[in-house]
Length: 230
Length: 123
Image (cartoon, rainbow over all chains, first blue to last red; front, side, top):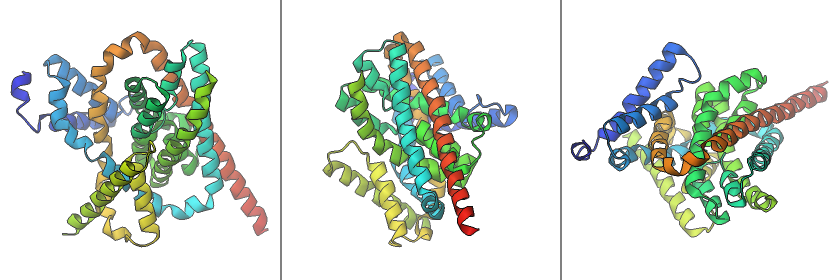
């Protein structure tokens, strides 16, 4: 089947879009957090490709045009951020404190869990940049000689986990302030979590966008320090 | 026509971000440089909000779709992931939850302090 399908330029893009639509419908019907449209669409595409023995490269040949827009879209996150500038200035201390806490907590939990699971140095540094945007993280992992493929996988999984648990975590732990929600989601689960934060509200989305940039940049410094600890 | 202009500005900033990424030897991607440039441009009024607003909203709206191809690409890493799957999932999930809770709580605490401080000043 790969042979026929590889001729179609719109196959991968359409498969992704329809799967996402299916995810949205399931979410609407069941309202459970696990019916996260992104998770559903990823699973549907994976199953489809496996069942019909279609190579990932064939799918990506078309689907890459969706990802092509990721850089412009990330740049556009500056717009909600600009609209919430007054709020950002007013609570700058809280935002800086929150972001630094986020980066520090990521590093510390990875270190502790690495000790628990007895990871070696190379495996440990692989997980350090797991909560930040892929492009920065890949650079960090390469620099520290970790496994880049696993870093990328952990970032994607972290993002999906973040967008699934965000609402429940905020509810259970009584994080009610929209700024705090945004910083928490962006620090824990980068751009993928941010799409969930956008859905929760403009302030949440703006603060989460800010956290992508700030925690990404802070991680460059923190990770190089923490890499010495194991 | 206005959409063409908006799209042009956004892609132009993407290109400038790429150029900076090429020139500066730091692991910072074009998108982060672009985000900061866009924010500075808006703040300094070099770029009026109306000149980018609609296309930005559209791109942010469809952003979740852009993560599907990379995530499906995990199929190719399955061989590397399988032997470490359990620690992998535990580490990612635990740290995601803990980071979200602690970051949210600390930020919220500081915001409450901000508000209390302001209330006292007003009295």
